[in-house]
Amino acid sequence: MYALLLGIVFVLLKILAIGPVASWAWWWVLSPFALAFFWWMWADASGYTKRKEMEKTEQRRQARIDKHNKALGIEPRRPR
Image 1: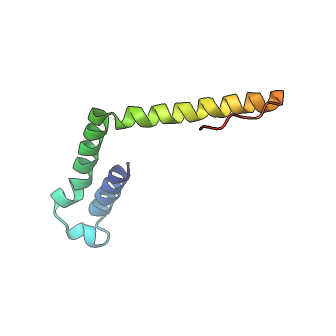
Image 2: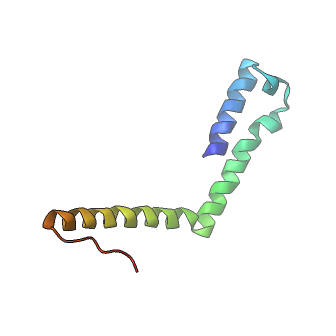
Image 3: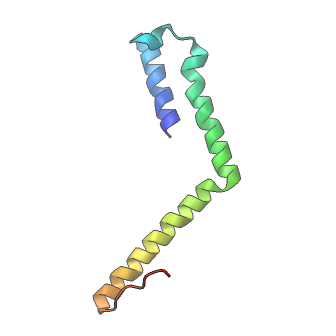
């Protein structure tokens, strides 16, 4: 995500001819997009994206269970 944002900033700076980016070659300016592409390919192929999604879902689920238990007056369970 950061590489994508960096690429967008570099392209805008290159087009508007602002700062040192204006004198860079286009392949330097566009290289963050290639980096973002390879990062997403690796993240999807390795299961990193799915693992992070499952962790977030599990945290939301546990928070919901703890909230309901607290409303019932039951102490939340702590992992061992």
